[in-house]
Length: 81
Image (cartoon, rainbow, N blue to C red; front, side):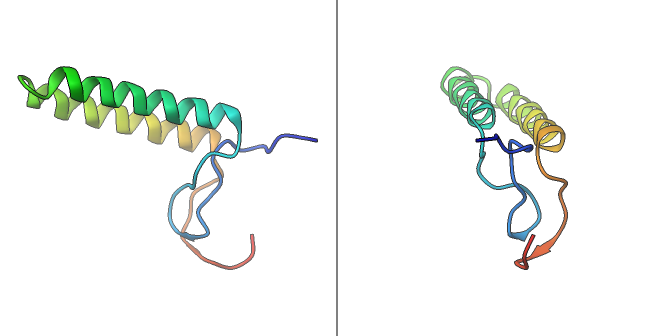
């Protein structure tokens, strides 16, 4: 059995990526979620501005990983791949 080439497949409808299809993709997504939730817990009570910057940086990082390891993005209308 061969593993898929992309960690994140393209969505069937719309633009972007769907859930991961490889263990590497799941590891990235779960690690991102853990780091995000830890930052919310630590920064939210006293540093909402820092949290906003962290959220922007983390979102950019996840987007870059999806671009690098996901199917090429593009608008899809639900047709066959």
